[in-house]
Amino acid sequence: MFRKILIANRGEIALRIIWACRELGIRTVAVHSTADSDSLHVRFADEDVCIGPPQNKDSYLNVQAVISAAEITGAEAIHPGYGFLAENAHFAEVCRECGLTFIGPGPDVIRRMGDKAEARRTMIEAGVPVLPGSDGLLRDEEHALELAEEIGYPVLIKAAAGGGGRGMRIVSSIEEMGKLLEAAMTEAGAAFGVPDVYLEKYIVEPRHIEFQILGDAQGNLLHFFERECSVQRRHQKLLEESPSTALDGALRARMAAAALQAARAAEYVNAGTVEFLLDSKGDFYFIEMNTRIQVEHPVTEMVTGIDLIKEQIRVAAGEPISFTQDEVVVSGHAIECRINAEDPERFTPSPGKIRAFHLPGGPGIRVDTACYAECVVPPHYDSMIAKVIAHGNTRGEAILRMRRALESFVVEGIRTSVPMHQRILTDEDFVRGRLSTHFMARFAPGAKKP
Ligand code: MV4
View 1 (cartoon, helix red, strand yellow):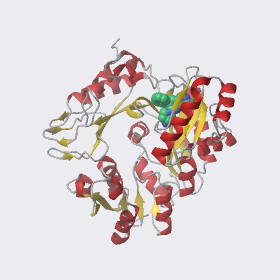
View 2: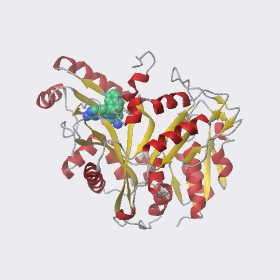
View 3: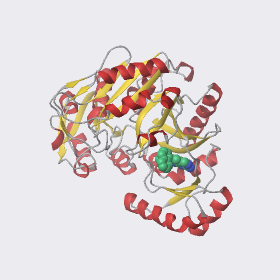
View 4: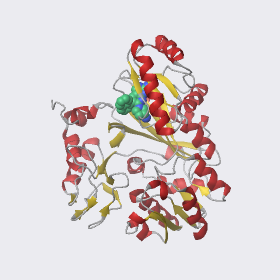
């Protein structure tokens, strides 16, 4: 096992990784920007290194600075968390060249799955269900029109380097194709530096359901069932839960098998996620694979009782997974609310100094946060300040516990998205489990409240 790990991240996930290392008896190195000197990940790590000014590119995305910090402190491995360098194949390669273990899949897997058109092709070859669409990249407008004619409108143009919605355009008719193809390519080029795009049939109001998977270096692959992630706004997830109200035992088993098939096709090692769209007929399709631990991993931890971060570290150290698929059992229901520092009406960021701060607790409540009373939420980073996770024996109990927890969550000095979450948790469709990626549309400013 590793003796020392460097954590190339900040905030709640950096702290979460430190807790896992503590339990494994591994020493920790925090890296931080000048804006994060007083952060809890710095305070609770065994060692810390300042790696630069607040701007991401100068610190948390600075490959040389992060690698140097690992070498200076004698760390043997780097945990990237999520975001920042987590899905950067070049970074994983540099780690390898420097004799450092990147806690995640290898650079080839990151690169291949990071190219969404290539991932799609891999899954087609492996027999994993994908939506009708292009086999790889779109060659030109003629190619796009030909495919759309065959598939039927609407179709969706997606950036190959994308994910997260940038460079996407819904095309509803022949007439729109030219200008929307160009717009998608321009946006993809500006956002990712590559204008490559591909095409899929567009599913109206799907559910977004993902499966957690874990692979070890011995070739064992397990899944940890699903997370329902349909409650999102502008491609930012707001609330996730497990199990999904949309799956019965038979559909869950088919999707789990497809997720493992996808992971096998990718020759996957470490923790990952296979994303599917589920349409209103109950048909599901692979859309993307995420090669990192995700923000919403606690939902799976709460229902399975498995510490996914510790498992990531163990398999990265070469240990085989110590349990079998049959031992991964879902118990009860878990819901996560991502609490952001934002204006609850306008959804704009609200950084600043937190004054009063009180965390919820009690039965079935877990809070992952790096905030504390009098801490400063800097404007330079993601606005998520806490994840509140509620577990109950049933979905109903988890909802009641989450509502009760959010009532006793006190954050003064900045605005938060707690009021928005309270509205979601009392929404009739939400309570009934009637969800789709369009669920949040009615919460948009100016939207009609039915
Ligand atoms: C789709 C889709 C419908 N059909 N793909 C959004 C982010 C990325 N991970 C995949 N996404 C979607 N892919 C097909 N073939 C619907 C979404 C989607 C979405 C699309 C347009 C506008 C808002 C959306 C919100 C959630 C999901």
